[in-house]
Every structure is written in C-alpha cells, then in structure tokens.
Length: 280
Image 1 (cartoon, rainbow, N blue to C red):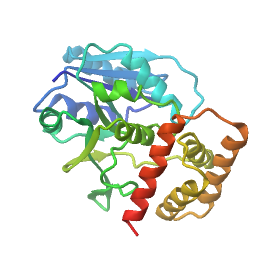
Image 2 (image 1 turned 60 degrees about the vertical axis):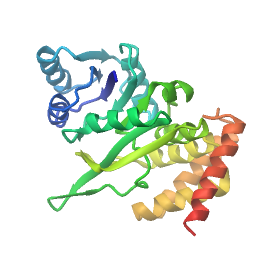
Image 3 (image 1 turned 180 degrees about the vertical axis):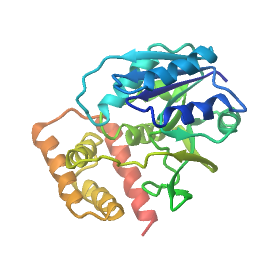
Image 4 (image 1 turned 90 degrees about the vertical axis):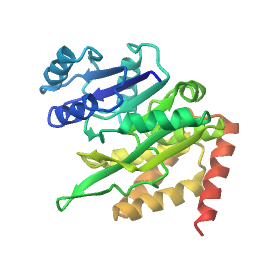
C-alpha cells in the first residue's frame, strides 16, 4: 500500500530530528514524507532539508502563513498545503513533528488496512514521559485516534471530505468516519512517544474554541455541558468549564457555520449518547 505522510511543522527544531529518525528506520517505509515548514524562525527547515538530501522520499516545502496562531485551523491549513504536493497514495497520514514511532509502526498499520476493507482510520496510542517513565497520555479514550498520529485510508478520507479547518477537526473526522460506516482502530501495543504533552501553552481562548467546536459538531447544549465537565475534570481546572460554555454560546448566537450537516449531527448526538449510556 502506498503511504504518504504530511508533517506540519512550526518551530519544531527541538523534536524534529528524533521524529524523522523514527520514520527512516521503519520496517515498512512510507513512500513519501512531506515536511511542511510553516513560517519557522528556528532550524526546522535546516533539519528537515538534511533528511531530504539523504532520503529521496522525504520532501520539504515551505509555507509562509501569518504568525497569528489560530487553534486547529492553522495546522489543518498547513496539512492541506502539504497534501497538495502529495503523490498518489492509498493511505494518507497527518503526523506531528514531536512524536517518536516504534520501528514496526507502518508495518502494523498496513497489515490492519489490508486485512479489513472497512477500516477507515488506524493508529497506535500516545505516551508521555512522567518521572522517567512513559505513561499513556490519558486525555482521551484509548479507542480514539489522536490528532498527532492520524492515518486514513484514501476512501475514508475522501468520503469525510478531508479535515475541518478548526478546533475539533481530530474529533469530527472520527465521528464522520463512523457515520459513513468505516471502522476505526487503535493498536494498544504500538506505543508512540509524545515528546510534548497535549495542552502545552493552551490559553483560555483555546478552551473557548473547544466549546465553539462542539457547537459546530452539533452536540447541543446538554452534550456540550457533559463533554466540558469531562475535560474540566481531567484538567482539574473548574474555570475551563465556563470557558467552553462561553465558546459554545458565542458560536450559537453568532450562528457560525457548522462542520456537519443536520443528518450527520443527528448521528453524532445519538452516537455520543450511546457512549454515555454504556458507561453508566
């Protein structure tokens, strides 16, 4: 299976070498790896270019975007910029520059996709370092395919019409894959090291954007409150709940455009309620 990977990278010099080392030592190499240097002011481009000079299947392109950080949208826009430079593929991946893959990562991925024609998305699990040990990054269910390690079958990627440019893109893609009757799978034996824990540098504006995303996914207010409470509990910060509800209400009164259709929204709400009831 032909694999194309896109890595959006902004000032990732501290992590990029270790990340790319884990790609070039894979037992099943991707056919193509595209690093998109998005307006970096450090040595991100230099590091990526050294790998490109050594490995013909690694490409480096530069995107000159604004310095303004737009949560979710900036990384998706950068991914799409790289995707426009991709060759023909069967599997397309959006990976972050601050991860280290196990050696057999893509070998295991290909085995799963080849053995299940309904599989739309697949990944390992993310682990972060605490007290010199690598532990599961417990901010999502273990069956959720996380944003830094997204690998899609082309049929699924096309059916969900790519990635939504905003916060929540890495949740709505999972939900839309299920809506279109694709399966998603995480392999717990594949431990991916996440060198920079999720949420590093998050501001209150980021959490308002999460509430906005729940509106755009048509969660409705009750589901948004439940999801916000869960995030607040995990973060152990009660103020975040208020930020997410404010974000939801702002989007509601501003009548911001949705990520999904009404029909898709009905499926998403039913799917979420089913998940909640199963845990009661």
